[in-house]
Length: 406
Image (cartoon, rainbow, N blue to C red; front, side):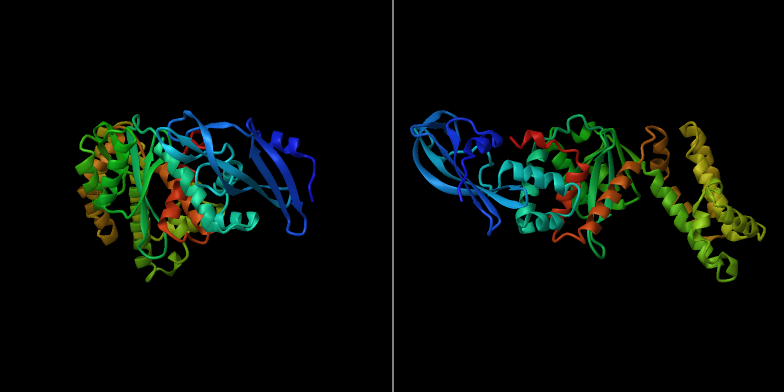
């Protein structure tokens, strides 16, 4: 069935001379709309290499998947010219509605990219009736193109963290611009080599490792070793949220050991994780009853509050004095989990106190970690790590796709 709406579709597709819509075919039974595009006889086209006008040598028939026409699949068909350039020989012309080598139109790919930032690619594949492997190629292409144009020359403060990428001990390392709040780089593993890879990627995008002023990380010896090797001028800051996490873990270990003798401590884990002001009325009542029992857990809890108070210190000197008192308290507490934490604090003394100079944390990076894990759960995992890393860049890289979509 053919309609005389060629002019309408030509306007909708924004086709410019010498291109025009030659015909429209709608197949209701197949649920498909086919748009046939051609070019004026005698037209010349720019050489895809040098851009100089060149005459048409011959043509190749090509087909591209386009945006749906209502609920129907739409396809664009064209005999694409090949030009013969005196300098570069016979070359296939770049058509204005698609990027070279793609089986999809630019508008279709833009839709897929926008949807991929909000939902699993497998779900998009079901909506548009395409295999998800083909859609992943689209997403990876544009993420790669956008990253290639990124400028890291002004990056000065970087956060480093890890996030799970599958079952078991599988992780990717994330490197984050703490000022611009965007993921700069992601790579498999959490070894010192991950830091080396980031340093190389930073240089590849115009950045300079020697100009990085601050690196915020956890207590990973691998990260610390990599940072000291590749970012020699950076102030290494131990993320305060990581230290608070270690404190909470030590506190909970004290509680679990003590609850073997004090049954009232069972099912109270979340009470000790909260600050007194954040407890519910019921939790406050339980907390007050437990506080009368002279518990080891209550002592450990006061140590936690002391660490929080240290992080409210107005300057580094005040913080160091508070940390010194806390360290003495921890190592003389006769509570092995707290003593172990004290030894850990002593081993990272300088990096902990460095927080009080730039007062930078990886708090935002932890939020990114949550977004990544939420995407991973919605997708029920990814077939490979490359897909997960691509998704990290898409949802947290603040990439500018308008620079690579023509």
